[in-house]
Image (cartoon, rainbow, N blue to C red):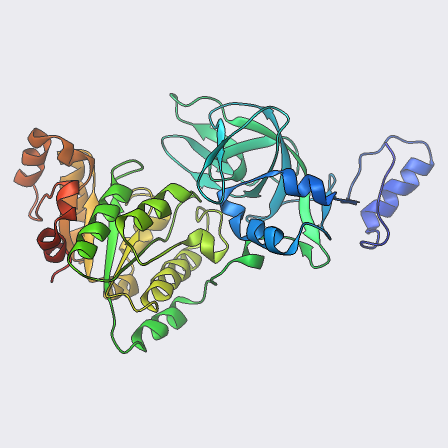
Length: 392
């Protein structure tokens, strides 16, 4: 195979020189590193995911000229790097969530722009950023490229994608952080920003027992109830995997401002270090608090036993930040275990809600084994209920 490279884009690395020498001797070599032009029309026509919406906005406003692809055996993607990829085989994810949250149908041969990222989803996939640009998977509809390590038994195989190359320009490979509207700062700086406000909003956190325990719906109903009570509410999601549905629900519920971790340049928060998770969570709170909202409601993804979330629950500084906690779960046992864990951590648990409240029987079981009130998810839309939950 001939080593191809555009000399105007960058200089040959040592590995490239050795590969070129081997090619000159007639030996078969793989492309180690190459940078090739990216046709503006090709980039414009590619389907762009929710996670890369800030980049999509830039290209809509400034055009798609000036980009190229970086690829080769020596190229290793980082979390948040943008990749142009081709759909090879349709699996679990048959549609790609666009910047406006419309689910665009996928077809074999489609070219998409997504971001590399790790994923932790007990009901779907455990996935990691691969060490190369080999064929990999689409592991989230919001636009996450990663290599599946494990999956739920009831989940179809992941959609397979072929990376064509990392998207780059004169500044280098484009990462989500490049165009993100907000920035992660140290938790200390974020806390100082909150403390400097003339009026500190009430800070509310929604935890859950697991994925699909009703966290997002509960948070949305609480936002709606507080808005119905005449309060200005800002809402967000501080951890998880990039997806637009949650943010869309918060907007529809009446939140004046909505942000999630993707607005801070993160495709997902799985496998961030514990200090990075803390910085991210505090940054989301600070950004929302500075909008002038009277209440900030933030959802934390996955369950309270998930690694990063479990450490957050036990963090002293996080405990001081939070004014009220809502816990969403699916059955009485989760309600009992989860409320005990949160109360042992001295977090201000104000209500238990979520999927379990769909059943009057389970609701009564849960109330019998917990001290916090068990409140129907949609009862949170009632102004008096919502105000009582946050301690007003």
